[in-house]
Image 1 (cartoon, protein in one colour):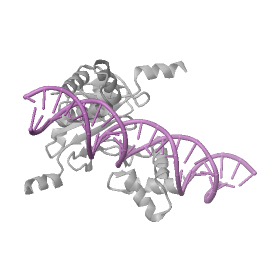
Image 2: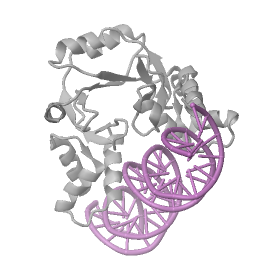
Image 3: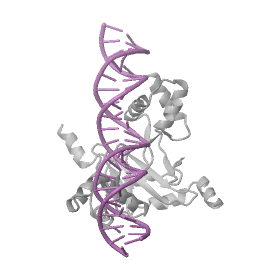
Image 4: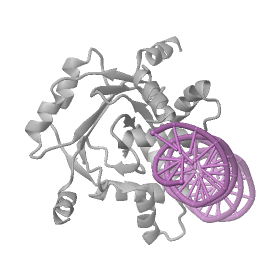
Length: 123
Length: 123
DNA sequence: CTAAATGCAAACTATTTGCAACGAT
DNA sequence: ATCGTTGCAAATAGTTTGCATTTAG
């Protein structure tokens, strides 16, 4: 692992947020001011291809990166916020219902997050 | 509904595939050769905002559009193919496990599709 | 006649690529 | 000396926007 790969991996896996490349870039730049975007993209892709980080795509939002450990997501379509959640029984249910092996699954639950619900109330 | 909106809606909802904007453009052009990309984007977004079609984002693939009727997807990461599948009990499971209301959910199951498995065998 | 929709081009965002210079074996 | 990595700039893909023109009610 190169210093960037290591740093980017650390950033993604220790962040509680789900960071965009842009945000990762900002973080890496604090420590290595000379880094450029392409390097972030290259490394993030390398990590992703190696299966070391997870990529999360939500419609109309830039991709975000996350630790690989299995969990699901709550997505607020208002503000884009992503929240981790662990839901039980999904994998078993899939195994039971699908007649075939699967590699993984990705479950996003859309909801209005507390912050947005609050904002709504105020108006 | 304008003629394009109508035509695009028809294309999306009657196609068995999950079409990209590019593909929708190709279809619309058969009937209306003068149409431009921007018009497809404008209309597809309009339909999406109106809740009349569904947008599907998968990492590293252009967005695709689908009918709104609730179902889940099998995704082949090799070739990108999307297949409809209906899985039972997910919504109930979510309602039970989440302490809050949700708007919708999106479940993608990754698997190697029969075509890709076949190709693999040949090599 | 008016308001909305379209064609067209330009702008923009997200991402990738080619290549020369650099750095670590 | 070699090979992978980086910085940099340019290229590309996907998408949006501004505006003059056209179209439909």
